[in-house]
Length: 314
Ligand SMILES: [Zn+2]
Image 1: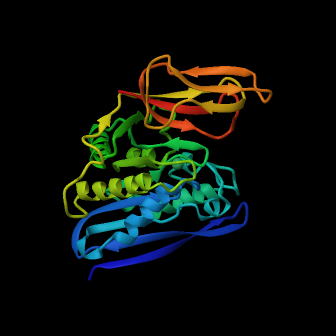
Image 2: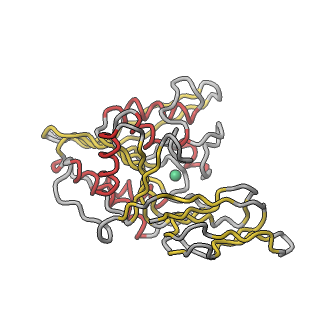
């Protein structure tokens, strides 16, 4: 008999004397097939991604599943309860930089280790659901990685395209700024095709971004054959971007972007300004190349030398 149930994996940080749990939804189908792992809640204020993954879980009909589906319903319950951006409030670490984790590490590392052992290593593919944090604006795109194994790299890229979000970025785990230590990057390094969804931001749960997350997971499941049906791209065939350009501030101050996620920006056009607290203009940040705006920081203030946006060059 097909089964749909939830397991709560205990997590213990001996260094900080903190105990918590990770809720994981599991569907076991009647027929043999691949295993898909979906992870949500790695970052605590990416609400559209959390809702999109939850919507996928609640909508799952176990009778339709061939093989198995794991859905990590909330990777970091402690960070989510505290609404901390990027990092866990107990150890200050970023869960998307510590994979595959450490058995005897601090909380964030134990969470990564537990999900690696209980979920990721059983999977034929991994979909990690992210978006912009509370201070960050993102529309809809996918990140995957190349790690030097041509067969796995191709499967990861095919999965990124199959999930159907408008843009897909492939980052070399050996050189890119976002690769080593990420959930998707380390899964690919271990031979498992994996992607990171990037949907929504600003603490909002806009339907476009919630639905974008759910639709991308369903497409990944169909692509793998764990759910029936054809892959349905969000808006035509996805574009695999040539490379991403990360923008950084030089100055600290009030941050004022003049563009939005999803917009097109020409080379040398204004991306954002940084002002001093007295209103003086400190810096203008311009697009080094033309492309689609994938990510914009929208927090009111910003540090010097901080990530402040990303452009996808086609
Ligand atoms: Zn994230």
